[in-house]
Image (cartoon, rainbow, N blue to C red):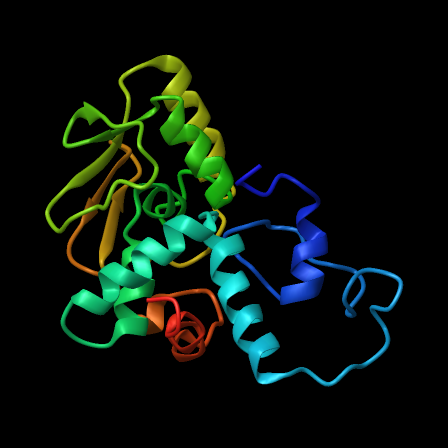
Length: 202
């Protein structure tokens, strides 16, 4: 089974706050499991692995997909870590989530998979689609699609809209104005450690 479908709060307790995975917050501050309260010294490898897992679970990508993004980011100009985060943030499912059309990234992925989301007026049902500057992300012209998004807009996952996006609530159309900047990425993660983790594999 490639995609995680287990208890999400268990992951949050282990890795920390993951705004894209769930809106719930853990009541217990220590990791899950029998030995969760026992402090153990983390190795360098464990720290890097944990940062990588944050990225995987928050954006809901498989290990193979993440490795592919890392390889793609290495070929691009500029900082590999920052480029990697930008690729993940510019995915269609994450863009739908950041526009407030879905409460979490898994919910946004379901919206996209079920054909409720359009790009420039055409239905796109591929969550990993890379949104580009100038594209409009809208809602399919059907009562069911509009009702779903209207309900979600009342309780958006994150309060602030990133600077690279704009959203018209009346028309229910979002526009991508560019690539997201590092300070607008909601996930608290050290991308350099993730690049180091994959350095032996890429």
